[in-house]
Image (tube, rainbow, N blue to C red):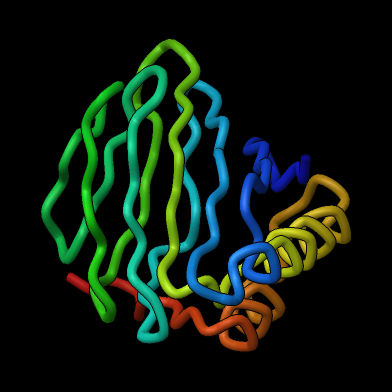
Length: 143
């Protein structure tokens, strides 16, 4: 289990377990949690399957609630992020194909968050970790 801020991530299948074809992990998201930095990735698709509670996924500006038994596929290049707007914890399964994304990313983000010692995290360091692992942080929304 990797603790990334308020979220717990448990890897069930890593890329090495599947000859790089798939990565599968479970995320436990506490009530009222908003993460991660909106981003996209061009190297893999991500399918989300709701297990407990409800997470709201925003994909290319469109919000979609994913409840237990529901799923959503995030295609390459789509900007997305999620939050748990509810009053109960949520859990979902994430399936990345191909399996080019793994625990090292979450551990490095966890390390950046821990280094902030309760203050605001170093956004430049987070963006650098994201880029190294094939994620592109979304540009800030301006009004």
